[in-house]
Length: 273
Picture 1 (tube, rainbow, N blue to C red):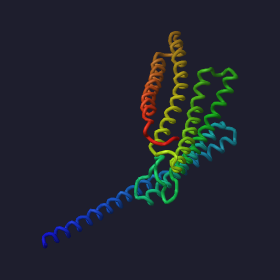
Picture 2: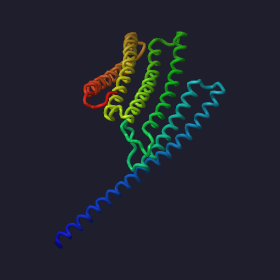
Picture 3: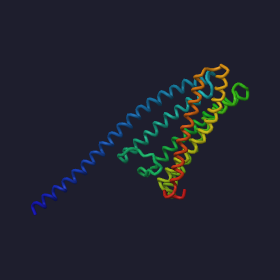
Picture 4: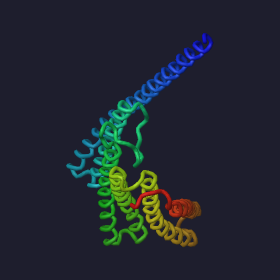
C-alpha cells in the first residue's frame, strides 16, 4: 500500500509539473510573438512617418505643376499601404494577446473574443487593392491618350492593360474571400472547401492575367527579332525578350498543374457553396 501511495503521489506531481511546464512554454511563446509584432509596429510607424512626409512633398510639387497626377496617386497609395500594414500589425497584436498564439488568416479561423479579425484584415487588403486599381487605371488612361496621339503602339497599350487586370483580379479575389468567409461563419460551407475555392479563384484570375501578359511578351519578342535582324537593337534585348516569355510560360504551366489538382479534389470536401 505504501508503494502504491508513493506511485500515485509521484504521478500526480508529475502531471502537475507537465501542466506547469506547458503553461510556461505558452507564456514564453506569447512573449516572443508580442516582442516580434511590437518591433514590427515600431518599424511600421517609422515607415508611415516617412511616406507621409514624401506624400506631402509630392503634393506640393503637384500643386506647383511639377509632377503629374500619377505621381500624387502613387504617393497616396504608398501612404495607404503603410497605414494598412500598421493596422494589420495592430490586429495581430490584439489576437496574440487574446489567444497566446500566432495570428490566423485562414478563412476557417475562429472568431477572437467575438471579433472577425479575418474579415477585418481582408477589408484592409481590399482598400489597398482598390487604390492600386485607381492608379493602374490612371496610368492606362495616360497611355491611351498617347496611343491615340500616335506616340506609342499596340504593344505599349497592351502592356499598360496588364496592371489594371492584375488590380481588378485582386479586388475580385478579395471580394470572393469575403463572401466565402461569410459562408463559413454561417455554416453554409466547410473551412477546407472555402480555402480550396479561394485558391481556385486566385489561380484562375492569375492565369487570365498571365495569358494577357504572354500575348504582350510574344508580340515584343517578334518585334525584337525583327529589330535585331535589321540591326536596330542588340542581341541582348532578344535574349531578354525570350527569357521573359519563358518565365511566363513556366508560371502558366505550374498554375495549370495546380488547377488540375484543385479542380479534381473538390469532391468529398464538404459544403455546397
